[in-house]
Image 1 (tube, rainbow, N blue to C red):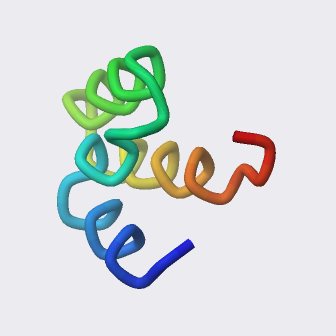
Image 2: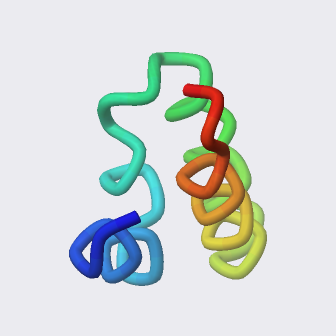
Image 3: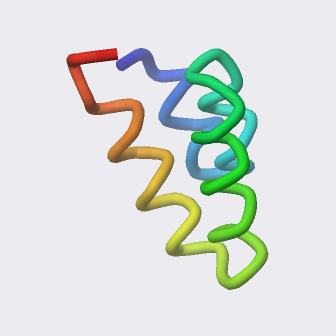
Length: 52
């Protein structure tokens, strides 16, 4: 996880996971609409997942 990815995850969560797939972007976008903090948490979890 690079510095820029973490910064993007904090500022605009869907932008940070742009290469993880459409489903991930949609989930993080919806969570960001409900509240900024859930979107940030979801983006950081997706970025921290070593499987993908």
